[in-house]
Structure formats: structure tokens, C-alpha cells
Length: 137
Image (cartoon, rainbow, N blue to C red; front, top):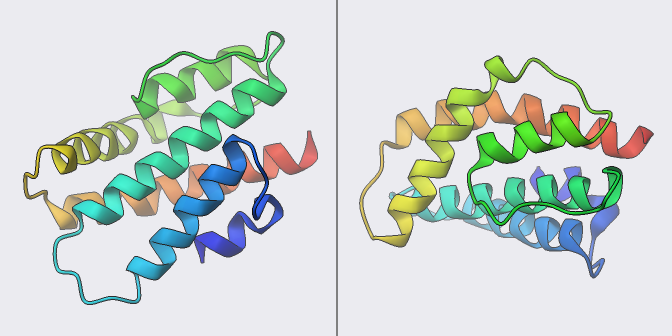
């Protein structure tokens, strides 16, 4: 599913290509019986982070982005520095949940998989908006 969404960036040597690599990993993880969803969260967070940074690099006036890993902050940067517009309030909490879950993965904590999956459903709509923006612009 995610690999197909990022198909246009397959093996491209830039940030979007790295996002595609994480998309492939997510699709592989979806075919396994891993009970703990934290590794899925890590790759989902990385996929979004790299794609946000790709958009900032390619669509903003200065082609730069901050060093933050906080997805809600990166969305705010994309909105402020590119022509992309959306209602960030729809996505803000879900992006924050995914950011926190990915941080907890790094420290080997178990995460709330139900809450994480709900956040993914919300963020998938944002991902579709971002991919459409990238395609058009």
C-alpha cells in the first residue's frame, strides 16, 4: 500500500527516495506476525518526516528544513513555507502521537497500538494530500 503510494520515488537518491524505502519496510512489516507495533511506528514516522523534509527541500523558497523530528512541527513548516494548505488541526494530535510512539520505540517501550493505528488512519489522509500536492506542484 505505502510502497505503491511512493512508487514515483522508487530508488530515487533523495529524501523522497528514503521515504519510499520506509514505505517498503512498512508494507513488509504488514505481512508479518509481529505483535508489537512500535517498529511499524518508527518506520511510519520516518516515512512522514523524510517526505515533509523532501517537500521543504523542493517546494520552499530556500530549500531548507529544520532538524526536528516532530511531525507536527514539520507540517507547520510545510504550510508556512510552501503553497501547501490544509487544516492542520485535523492532523496535529495524530502527528504528535506518532512522534511520541517513535520516540518510545527508540527506548524500547511498548506503545498503545490501538491509539497508534487510529493516528495512522488520520495521517494517511494527510499523506494523500501531501502526495497530491507534490504531484501537482
